[in-house]
Length: 511
Image 1 (cartoon, rainbow, N blue to C red):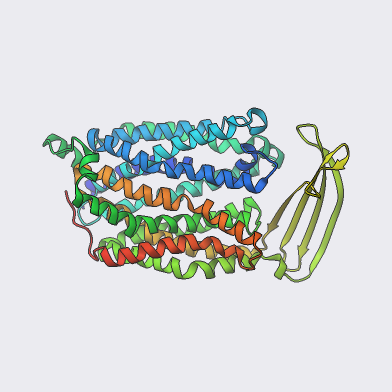
Image 2: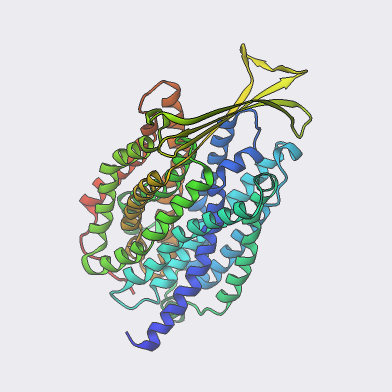
C-alpha cells in the first residue's frame, strides 16, 4: 500500500473511530454510573430493586438496537453510509446530554424513570445504526486482504469508549467532594458528551462517501428495498442467522461479561469501592485494548473463525475459576485478624425530606491492608425506628478498599477477560462485512451484530445479577458464581454452531 493510500485510510479511520468512540462513551456512561443512577431516578426504599431497575433500563437500550439496525441500515443502503451515521451521532449525543438534565425521582416522581427510559431507547436506536455504518465504511475503504486489520481499529472504540467513561467519572469524583458528586457531579459526564459530539460532527462533515457504495450507486446497483432483499432472500437470510447464532451471539456475552459484568460484579457482589473498581478496570482495559488490532491483523493471516472460536472456548472454560478467584481475593471472611476495629455511635441526621435517620458506621482494617467499611442507616419516625415486618427499617452500605497486592490480582483477572473479548471482537467486523454484498451490507450485517450484542449481550448484567441475588437469598455458598451460567451457556451454543457451520477460511469478499 502506498504512502498516499495509507494516509487516506488513516483519515477514514480517524473520522470514523472518533465518532464511534463518542457514541460508545455516550452509551456506556449510563452503565458506568448505574450504581449512582439507581439512587437518583428510582425509589430509594429498596436499593436492590432500584439497582435491578437501573440495569433493566440499561438493558432496554440494547433491546432496541436491532430496530435501530433495521431502520438506519435501510437508510445506509439507500442513501449512503456517511449521511446515516451523521444522524445517529447527533441523536445519541442529544439523548445522552438530556439524561444528565432530568430531575431526580424525589423531584418529579414517576416521570424521572420514564424519561430516562425514553432517552435510553433513543440511545439504543442511534447505536443500532452507528456501528454498522462505521464498520462498513472503513471496510469499504480498506485494501483487499487487510480488512481484519483496518476494521479492528473500529473495534477498539467500544472499549476505549468504556475506558474514557471510567476516566471521566474518576476525574469528576476526584475534582468534587463526595457530597457534590452525589448531588449533581454525576451529571457532568453526561453533559461533557455534547462537546465531544460537536467536535466529531464537524470532522465527519468533511468525509466522502464510501468508494464502493459510490461506485455501486453510480452503476445503478444499489438496492431499492434493502429489508426485503436481506430477509426475503432465503440464501441471504441463512447467512444472517449463521452470523447471529454462530458468532455474534457468543461474542456479545463474552464482551459484556469481560467488561460490564466484571465491573458490576466487583461493585455490587464483592463491594469493592466504586472509584477503585473504575481504576482497576481502566488499567486492565488500557493494557488489553491493543490486542483488538493484533487479533484483527492475525485474522487476515489465519482466518476469522479460529480466533473467534478460541476466544469463546477460553471464556467458557475459565470464567468460573476466574470469578471464584476474584471473589475470594477480596472476601473479608477469609482475611486474617483485624488491626483496627472502630464502631462509631449512632449519628442522627436530617434527610432532604425532613425525616431523621440514625447512622451507624463500622470500620475494620485488616493486617494485609484491606479496609472494610459498613454504614447502617436506620430510618426514624418520631425518634423511633420505623418497623417493617417486625424489623427496623434500615439500609446497609458496605464498601471494601482493596490492598495493593490484591489490586494487581484483580487487574490481571480483568485483563485476561478482556483478552477473551479482543479475540472474539477484534475480527468480527471484517467477518460480518465479508458475508454480505455491497447493496444490502449495511442492513444485513447490522442486524445479527446488534441482536447478538444488544439482546444476548445487553441483557447479561440484569440477568446475571438476578441469578446471583436469587442464589444468595437461597443460601448458596457459591452464589457469586451463579450469574456466569448465562454467558457460559450462550457462548457454548454459539461455539458449537460456529465450529460446525462457519468456514475456516476468510469469507468471500463481495466487492
